Image (cartoon, rainbow, N blue to C red; front, side, top):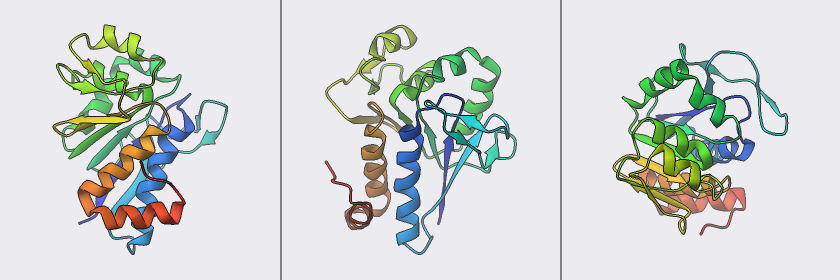
Length: 193
């Protein structure tokens, strides 16, 4: 059964944080006759998103129109700090974690998971410049600075920017096996770690 992969985007999101995982899941789906994943972006509203370094991106769905999400991806970027101040948006976004089988953060997106209490007493990864902020957001969290990604239960977090690609491949392997990952990585000309 196809899984819905919802990638939340917001102003000043880091491009590779969301585009890397988007590509891994999308290419995996394409190489498997479009039978595995339905990958899409969504945002607070339908306005174009202006990323870090000013790429304009149009979300496919809004928070109100987005379908149920099986795999929720929270990327990072400079905009995470503004996102954390928007309590209403955070609450509405968190409502989509209830049905998600897997929740994944990339880079400073871990700050969002920490603010939701999902990293309490749990290991996590984030960008190397964000660990000090995380210590105040989730004091009981267990930073794993030496790792590219880490998990507990159904919560996954990855280090800075490109680490989200590695974590995406890891999740594809958990769901569909190593041959699927090898085929996708080969097509993308990506060297797996």
